[in-house]
Length: 138
Image (cartoon, rainbow, N blue to C red):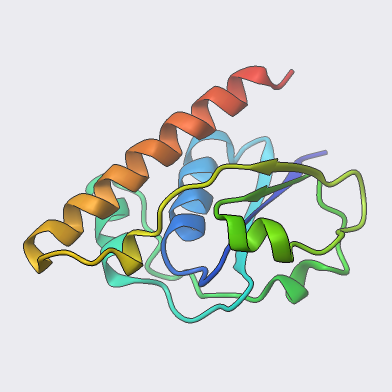
């Protein structure tokens, strides 16, 4: 049976969407992966673009509230910001909680020419965290 993983952040627009796409690409054959937010809004176009640069398509993803996942058992809940960690509810099942505090590139205040670099950097950080975490699993 596949393990269920839920990435959780505030807007479910960038970090959690990219993490969902990455983990699905890296371990989708052994994990069911989803993402949600405490205050979901939309999937950020720059997140879609950064993922497309890695040949991962998240253009059909939608932003979701964590309430959608409360009825289902989850093996891992990975929060990607302190706000999500504080607001994270109790999920059914084993629900091992993991926390990675990663800056939100969608809220980065910088010149437009530098914003895409912020999304690429977060994607790089997420991939390093995910690969390191996967290496600890049986």
